[in-house]
Structures are given as C-alpha cells and as structure tokens.
Length: 223
Image (cartoon, rainbow, N blue to C red; front, side, top):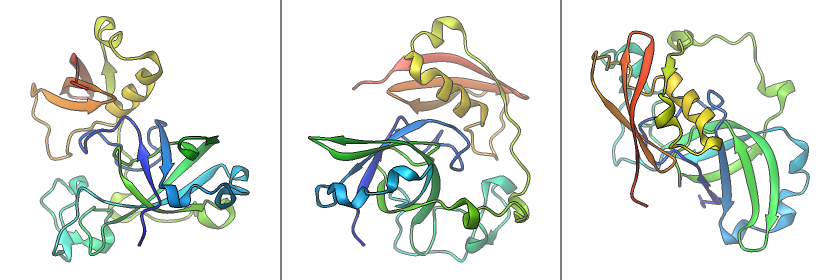
C-alpha cells in the first residue's frame, strides 16, 4: 500500500499519546505526499465533521506476530487474543482512528492540508487512507466493549504557574488533558516516581500520588 500522508502534531514520542482517538482534543495537521496533493481528491470533504484515518503503527513493525498480547488495561500480566485488543503488535501494523475535521487549507507549498482534532497518532505517523465518518452507520451506542468497557478515571492535574508559563498558551489546555488521562503504563503506579514525557518540544516531569498528578519540571528540548 502507498503512504498518502503523514500527521504532524506535538506527540513526539509514544509515551504520553492518548490511548484512543477523541479522548484529547489536541490539534494535528495532515500533510499529503506530493502524488496525492491534487485538490480534486478533496472535493466534498469539507461537508464532513469527522474522518476515519487508516495508518501504520510505524514504531511497532515486527517480523513475527503473537496470537496473544498483554493489554495494559489488565495490568500487563493477563494475555488476551490480539484480535480482542487494540494492541499495536498485530499481524499487520494498521491503526484506525476517528478524528474531527476542523478545516481544509489549500497551500502553495504543501498542497491541501487537513487540520484535525482528537488524533492518537505520534508525530510523523504515515497514513494509508482517509474515509468520511458517517454517523448514521458508524455510531453504535448499544455496542458492548468487553474487558475494555470501564472508562478511565481522570487525574487532577496541578501545574505551578511558573512552570505552566513555559508552555505556549495554545498548547496548555491540550497538555493538561493529556496529563489528566494518566500517561503512565497502567501497571506502573509507584508512589513518588518521577516520570518524563515529551510534548510539543518540551520535556514534562511529573509524579502521581493517588488521583493527583503534580508537574515538577518543564524543560525545553533541543530543537
């Protein structure tokens, strides 16, 4: 399959990326490869509010695959069938995400650019295809969710003003949302441990005590 585009956003490493699309309303840009920049390919797309992205788990490509994986939601010790999970370690490393379409901008140097929200893709992730989301058929409110049915409890996020001021204002709300989702692997809950997360050109240091996440340092990463 051809790669048609790449996504660009503030998620520069796997640690800290939202676990599912739509959980955090962070903004991303989808930049298309030159071959697919013809405006005709986007005719009518502005009429949709949401899109499906088919993309590659480019950081999880492996030669072999396992029929079972250990979902972090179950503590990382219980094995489940790979097809009962959204694990990136699959026979084919393909991801599926629903994102909001904010706008389409037709540029001279980059061609049509899609501005989307709610993506759970790392910066630079290759995209194979884009399809419109159809609410009358794609939404299933009565669906069951197996062992993943329980929603995550949000953390209370505390960021001292002197640290928050280091982050550009337009990135602050999204960072708070990412931290509230608890970026730590689910099986890691060591009290007092300092975790480090890369976001938007910054390294965020934080600890978690109970339901409270405390940011303790913000460092500008080398560009």
